[in-house]
Length: 257
Image (cartoon, rainbow, N blue to C red; front, side):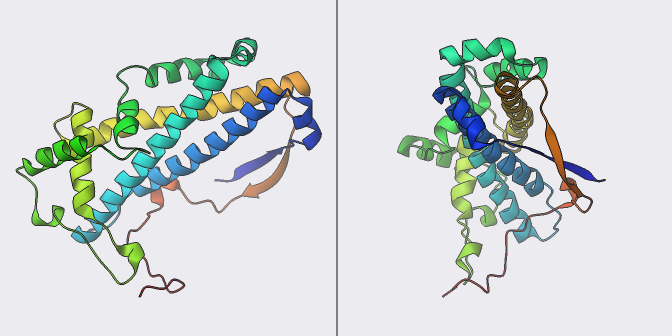
């Protein structure tokens, strides 16, 4: 499959023609969208797995959880940007009628996704971008300690001369039990699937809103049509479902001692 890569010119003069709040939100929203897309792409790749080695499986699964939490944090910060600088300001009331239908519908879904009781909000507030409190860690430890199916390999840390290959698995094992507890889900695996199920539509809706706001900005300052230039045809892009992201890596360019 060939990917058609288009470029939309965003000149300095165009940016200067925008009001300060317009320009700031456009640039910040693009930055937030870039972060979420990059991290979500990585989470998809991380969930592919592909190894039968039990040690690799264990550490690659835990590595996935690390990036899931980082992605949730980035998603929450993107939502805060939209809520604080669009919905709660005159700028939002001005541009809301200018959004196309996909962007407006995406915004409505985001309001619900990040509303009261949202699983993503719960994880972000307790485990993503914020380290859990002493009491939260202790509760997570007690929940993990009651797990009858746990193995010696769960209560361990893994080391290698290459520091990038070091992983305190026991820390992650305990904290994922805490995440499950805050989500009201007794089964850790079910909690993981529940969170991933919430993340996919959020990633899409954040991008949809960012694109819709961009279109509205350009229609106001340039014209009714977005003019883009084809700059590349990529015919060697890999299928995202066929890529794996290993935990163990050789690090000859880094000092390991």
